[in-house]
Image 1 (cartoon, rainbow, N blue to C red):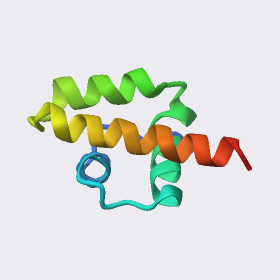
Image 2: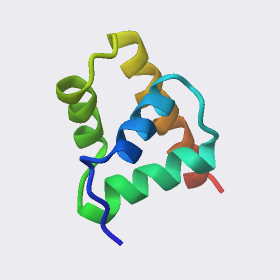
Image 3: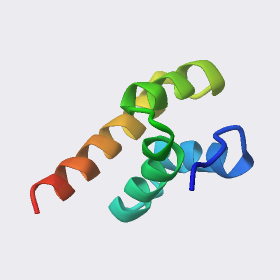
Length: 77
């Protein structure tokens, strides 16, 4: 099911990802739910951080690095 990214749940996902509060499974599930099923990419997630949040760049980097690490861990299985 395609999810609308303009929701409180999506905002919460971005917050939790940027603050390192999600495990790998939660990171990947959220990315699939809000991005992959809608045809979006990692670049779209980065754009959402840059244009729709006020998180400092350090938080954005944490989120992006966490997502990349989670995706890499699944790809190696």
